[in-house]
Image 1 (spheres, rainbow, N blue to C red):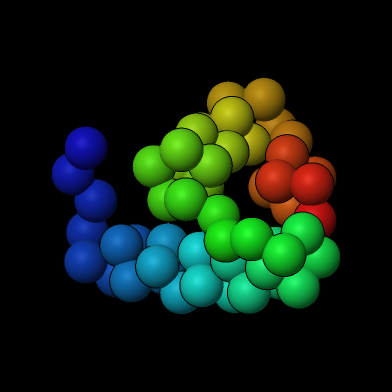
Image 2: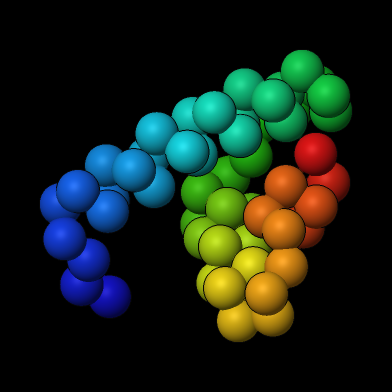
Amino acid sequence: MYLPDEVWRELDVRFDELNAKHKRQHGEALEKNRDYYPAIIQAGLNDKDLEEILDL
């Protein structure tokens, strides 16, 4: 999927923020391809909260 550089940077920053929160709450890291990207798509398609999907 093509996304402008600014969007990729924002996705990376948001992943780092959510990953840190997930590590504190669950003791393990998120995986970008397994956890984060599907959650981003699900949140957008289903109008759901990303943090709720990731159990944060």
